[in-house]
Length: 114
Length: 109
Image 1 (tube, one colour):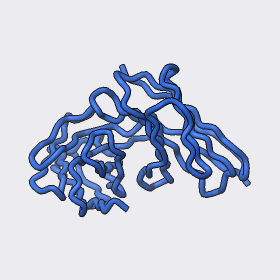
Image 2 (cartoon, one colour; image 1 turned 45 degrees about the vertical axis):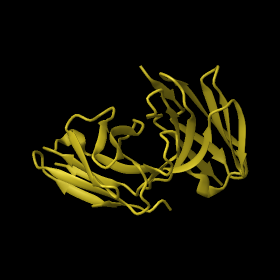
Image 3 (cartoon, rainbow over the protein chains, first blue to last red; image 1 turned 30 degrees about the vertical axis):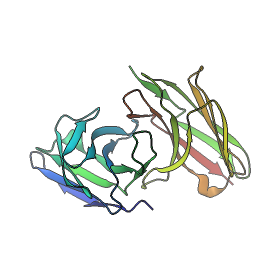
Image 4 (spheres, chains in turn orange, red; image 1 turned 30 degrees about the horizontal axis):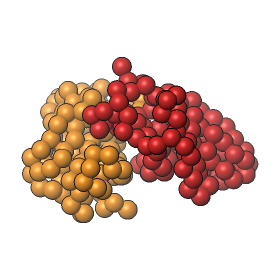
């Protein structure tokens, strides 16, 4: 157990509304990631962070922003939710200090945008 | 572009052996990971290969050939609880994980 929680676990929202998902870790890991998982696709990286206030874009960052003001929290915001952002969102951490270290995942958030 | 290919679905019998293949074309290579994901749950780490050869871990083994862009996950003595999706992922030259779509493994009694 890598001590990762995500909230909320399920959310239904309407098109055009802002949504924030939270990832919380208890073990001071440096690297944190946000992925989305959709049927027929592999996990796709949205954004990642390599320290407080240090973030970078992933493969599918359009329409998403992130913030990391504390080591333990990594927030993902959908600025104006669209139906194409209906997905399962996973947060992950790397336990080591290197980018090559194994990633461990939180339980996921299922988001539905109507 | 970057590409990871795995079979979409496989079926095997309880107690048997199954091999799940993964081929990849990525910009750079810094290791290959296998994860298991039960329906409705998060992926969990199974194995990591960065050098050619076979890594054995209990009933599960993972093989890598970097020259062929190929890996497989071997599951022995299959149990019903092994019914899950198996995800192959490659760490590319930017140290980002590129994921395959996963192989759904169905175990029949």
